[in-house]
Amino acid sequence: VVEEEFTWFVRRRGPALRRTAYLLTGDVGRAEDLVQTALVALWLKQRRVAAANWEAYVRRTLINISTSWWRLRSSTERPTANLPERPAAGWTDAVDERVLLVNALRQLSARQRAAVVLRHYEDMSEADTARMMGCSVGTVKSLASRGLDRLRQLLPADSLTEDTLNEELS
Amino acid sequence: VTNINELLRAAAADLPDNPALAEQVVARGRRHRLRVRAAGGCAAVVVAAVGGPLTVKTLANVGGGGIDKITISAAPGSRMSNPRPTGAQNLLVDDFVRNGLATAWAAGQRLQRSDVAGTRKGSVFYAYDPSSAKYWAIADFEPSASALAKHGTLNGGNGDPLIQFQDGPFIFSRSAGGSWTLVGDTGGGPICPRVPAAVIAVWHLPRC
Image (cartoon, rainbow over all chains, first blue to last red; front, side, top):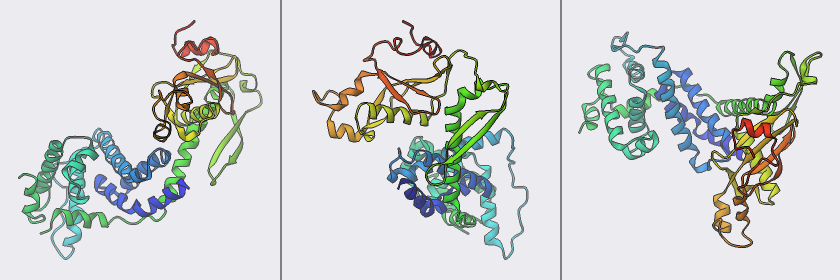
């Protein structure tokens, strides 16, 4: 019965978890691996974690694993300060913006990226983000602020509204 | 000009769907559990058989199509068929072992399994002793929240089944491939009268 419930949970919430994982990793393959690793961790503990807490458990696992993967990756890959190729503006501007954003997210540190994704994609409060990341509210503010500041440097000047980019600084 | 929230949602929506995610996760989970069980249940046998190849004799499907049981036999001429007794081996405790101990203890104490939250952190020791050809373990247990709600605290008085949680550490043994059996409790006393000395030595616990 628990396994049926678990399968139903993955079918219902899996797509949303995969999208979060995609923003946390900036790579389709890594996102798939990340979300499956987090869900397998839950599957192994499904009887010990109350069903009401499954999603929070998986989301926290996503954050923790993506941070540890980034530390591992940082010893083998070297992110550059500037995006290597910026496509020229054209009729595919909307697609270009999304590709640029994902590439820019990959330039952030794992914790900055997690703070930006949780605050601005998941629409979580600063307090909830802090609980999810296991840090203080002040740290979340700092990480999100620096993350947005870095995005502003990496993205074309007219890509994002100033209101959004400034709100974390206020 | 776009709001960051909208742009993040648009970027995330580009991810192609994976309708087989649930099946892939369950399959990966079963493979992981199989590896853990194989490592926990056969570690001592594999160590004893070094020098001779192993043959997987049977793979049995138990429940839901997941592979749950492996029988390993020795290839002809290997040392596994007549393993030389060596010293006891301290083994890694995993969730499978903890759960097996909790289940055996609950049955031995005539408690519901749901009354036992699990083993107490740091209390579980697990080893294989070739001289007795048995696995040995000691553990203490924690009552579940539902048991506490049902029966009150550990000091609830006479007739309180939770009083049994205080008699540890509890001693268990099992043969290879068998289930854990509760050998007995210690009431906080020494474990040496019932646990082989070689096992106590690898656990680095006080000798008698």
